[in-house]
Length: 306
Image (cartoon, rainbow, N blue to C red):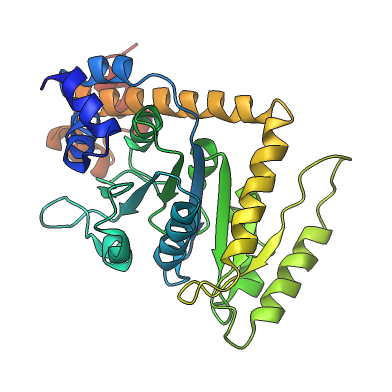
């Protein structure tokens, strides 16, 4: 790959060039380091979208794309999908719901397979976000796979995290549980045209009233949206902008960027360790038979038999 030429083409709107660069970064190609150096910088608004399956994440993301494109912004989306059990690739379901933007050269949408990585993201998502920022995208949306309450990695990656809820899906109970609810910066009650939307808002307000806040601390707004009609999207975009401004007025934006960099480093280290250390069938058989405890087996794998 001619890195400089490919980067220039990607910045000019060549989506095939963007795809080539992302593939190289995701797969750890020999050019990855040169690509990183050639795409330093960028200051995109990174928005994470999470929530249980079926709450309308992809439809909402499509609406956000449309709103930002009306303002002339370049938008990139990383839609993290479960890995196919057959090919190992992404199912591509999210991209079907964003087909309205398929011909817009200022929009880039990519499905990313988790490849077994837990936490709602793929291991390479952080590096992909950094690349898209460096290619001049103004907004980068990361839609998580939708795995439930443990899906908190997005908070380390995004500047602003949206948690989507929907009426009638048991969220009244989820609102008082620890986990993904705690990492959101903006709550979104989507499908607000359905019965129970006002009750979902009340549940979230009741949950928030139990949280002690210091003066000047960000208080998460609750936005009601109907993503497929666009209702409430303007208020949501405004809430995202207000949170970004609040972060910029403190040291928190820089802290989040450092946290993102740390998460990227850990992801690379984890991948390297998984590739370096192998668990043999014989070792697993010893543990399964009760002849060896797990801790000792792990030490053997790591080469520490002391």
